[in-house]
Picture (cartoon, rainbow, N blue to C red):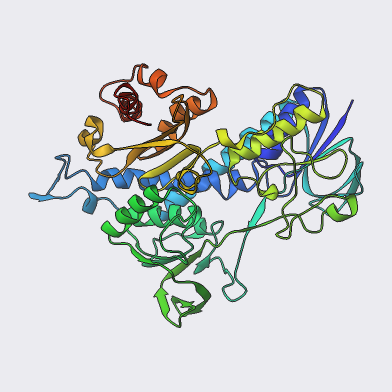
Length: 472
């Protein structure tokens, strides 16, 4: 049997392990924290569980507009003012769900005959891996195929060390048992925006410190504009073009220093300033595995590194920090290394989502690529305010945007800004992956009333341009 050793038990690692076992490999997976890795235990699953609670509060905040009130002791009062957030219980549920998900993955490994070692691993050349167990014992494993899926660690500023109590990274926020009086979020990328949105909806006074002009600098600009307007409309303070240089505790306060000399004071601070790949000290250089200056592992589209028989997947490759991409990279590595049919990773078909309120989902070609002239495509943006279902639910912000090729009308990308955009983007993702035209999408049935109806309507409006002889 072909021996497969996997370093890291996150989505890239455990999904690869399942494929490796399915294809007849003798699979060993080494994970130091628990199967599911940071994605399940401290990152994706916990954060989205917290956000799910915040989504309920978002709905409650719209209750009065929908005609819902609370009658208490003869006084008519708003629903939101009657709901208390028990953060200790919320975070207990968050971590319980994460642990349960990890246990489910562990059981799946067991039923597939995959060996799990709790500990760490390092390459000993390209054909051996040395595993160090939690008790410090070492074992040398034969490795015909090695997959590195070691993930990342939250980046910390030397002058803003996280203590897990007042100055926090995104792995430590679940230690909180009470809502912060005032939360300073440093970093306006996806992680910072998601936590800022969630805590704002939970009723926390949030200050978002952004070194850029607006939130989510890497996302669709129109979508970022909508989110910034929503945040500011809800009373969130956004400090644009403000770079944080340090953070310190002063009693029950946190003081964040900005590059221009200003100070921001709050009860807690969340540092969301990026991540560092877990690639140092695991024998990569000695094995001939090339890494970038940032420490990310260089791979090709079938997950191969520069060392024979060594593959890599997930955030440690710096390709796309998405669990779905990590899982696909891991599967592709096993399909390729064990001789099964395989298609190279196609990033143009990757859909992603920012779990703010409203959510922002994207797939395929971006507006920036079109504006720069890199891609020639036509654009149609349809605001959600005309959607009947949105009106029923009290949704005022958001839009659907489609990109298509000018001659054929083939859909090459899209953006959805809406509640549950992560679900709505799927139809656009299918259209991009299967090269469906706007005419074909316009002819597909949607439920009325529904948010998804706006996607079909956008396609119909693009079709109308074609029928009238207008350019796409």
